[in-house]
Length: 192
Ligand code: FES
Image (cartoon, rainbow, N blue to C red; front, side, top):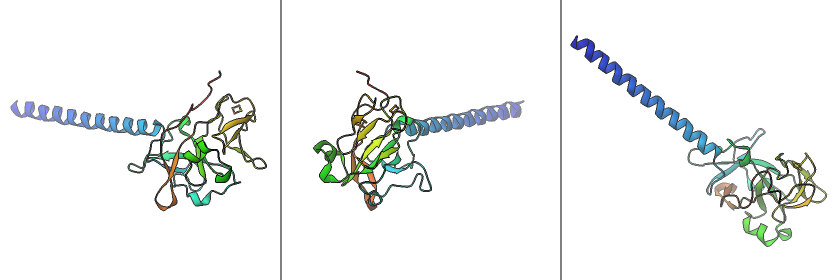
């Protein structure tokens, strides 16, 4: 009887312990999911969002003025968590001739490279087109254009406001590191 009770108690303890581990695992998974949805944070490293180099750090030296933007995510360098859990975290990086940058743009740049939210402020398409003849970021959905040399202000189309800026600094080995959280509105709107 005692053995049975003891056994049951151990089983219960083991079960509770297992439940606790499972719960802790759940909390860990939640924390991971939460970290993935958190907006880019200071100290994060920008990594390629897609292609053969997906999740690998973007090399600033590979970006040249006059070339299209590269889509990116921010990655926590400690946990290697890529913050791809929210579309609102999608970032674009592009090189701009520093002599053509506005002062505000220059303040957010790492050398010739600037970063912005990649979510169009019209109805939320990805700003993944590029008008090479005028060096403008182009949203393919309704042809809004943004000037990457002037804090991504709208130069054409229905977008109601500029893209949020993500200040950068140079990181180790020529990587791009987030210097501050987004400045400005991320996502659709505002409409007034
Ligand atoms: S969603 Fe970008 S212009 Fe409409």
